[in-house]
Length: 171
Image (cartoon, rainbow, N blue to C red; front, side, top):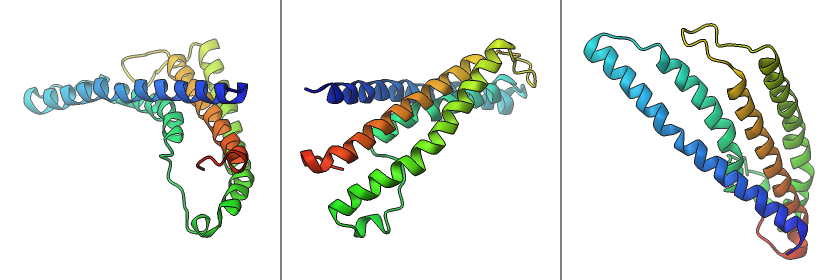
């Protein structure tokens, strides 16, 4: 097995683990929201923590799960023109469009998510708008890690597009 294949497998396994972790975050979010709704409707007690927990966990879930979604080819694509192309045309379209439409926005996401994490860590930014007053940097770190995993999974997909005609692999 070549170094590239080993690297692709390592990135895909990392995406899988991050995706499973992301999926498991649904359960604490569901418990907190259910508890809050029960307390509010049955006992007329409002828990301010529910919104914060849902907001934090959903942001982390979305970014940590995105690499897994890409590895499973679960992202929505508009295939109106793409499906009409022959295999060679699909490979060329992928090799041309992926860097332009994936990596340029990904570079911006990497830049801004890293800067946001560093800012929140250095200045100890807190969630001041809620009673919890929690530090923001752990969430920003997990978002940055999710973006890195997504970018690496995008590199894996790009290499699969480029080497697909030589190896006869599935696009």
